Image (cartoon, rainbow, N blue to C red; front, side, top):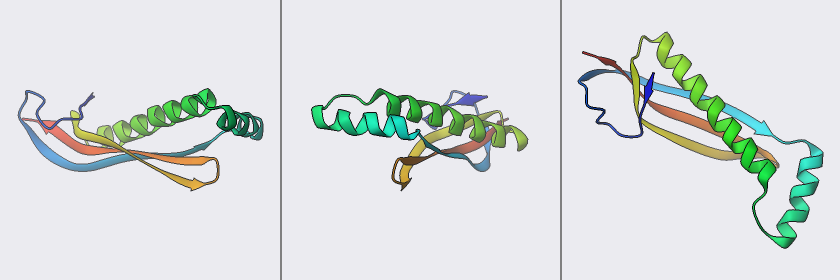
Length: 102
């Protein structure tokens, strides 16, 4: 499955439609406490960086699986959207346009 953030991927295609994958992730209370201390001194909160990276990978995999079910060869114009669902829980959505090569 080709996944691109651009519309032009060097091949002609027909649009199938919107595909998306969503996940909501959080870290455990121990990580939250550690993150609270880190906000006092500043710097990267590695536990949350890992959580976001894992969530993005999971959202992309779910989006690609939906595109495969629709018979797509690629996804173009892929984007991420994120929001806070509740304290210490983030939603990540990967979305794009599923296409079939002609």
